[in-house]
Length: 377
Image (cartoon, one colour):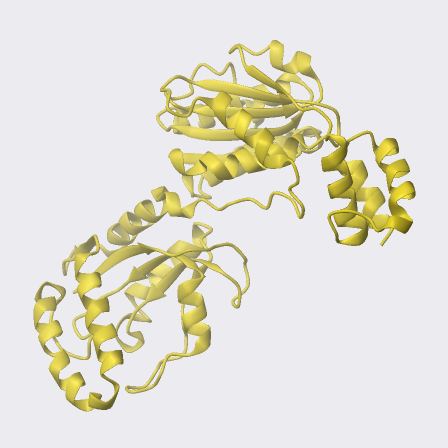
């Protein structure tokens, strides 16, 4: 018999074995590695989850490595597989109480390190309280694994924060205003446009807002550089498939033409409360490639569109709320430029006049300040 439970960790991302992970698989290698655990691991990877599995079997009494501890701490979700002899005994998961009592033998063996035994006991008590499922012999394994995949795909812990900016000066104040425009507690559908000059920080603000509210939705997608990535039908299809994958957590949805892609998005997402960001749009058709006529969005859904062309927003089927991004004030511009140029909040006296000239030239545009400041290093 086996069971699994999920538990949230505290960080995420990366695709290398030594980096952070979406999921940590905890199991007893000799029992399930080449069977159930192996199938589950492959299914998780196929769905795009960066999953840690330890291929080195520990012998009894061995300490777990620093690499394993790091993987555990850096994983957002832990799936614990309990075979009959998970605690080196032939008890079933329902008899976890018996396993707890069996810790007496460990207390004798490790009487000089009682702190470690107490940690084990506490961990088992916590494991017993986690939500989970029990695998019954004879039940199709693939169906059981698909159930796990559905839970992992739907958990909000699967949402990853976006990198906002190296120096997010002034971003929070903008993000707070946009977040208020979203009226997150309302059950209505809401579209917010972020309008402004190129390089003024629209994308940065959208990322910050995304990170602030993403956990309140059943699914989310951030499509970057829509204008640049919509030049061909193939690139539009790639974006449509990206949207479906990010929200549904599955790569099984293949789109063969843009019009069909619009219908698939509508069919699959119309019952989900979603957050969608369309970044750098300059034509109405680029929005319609993903939303159609915007008439299918589920209650509570939110769409954020960043654009340099305000007219794109005013021609939508849904009247959007529009946030106008203004240039940085002089203090913010000075601070941002100084961070990139001198790695300080302000320049030294010898560079103050030159800095003021550059700030005047950049006219409060964060991207211009970043480029000029970085070139001075």
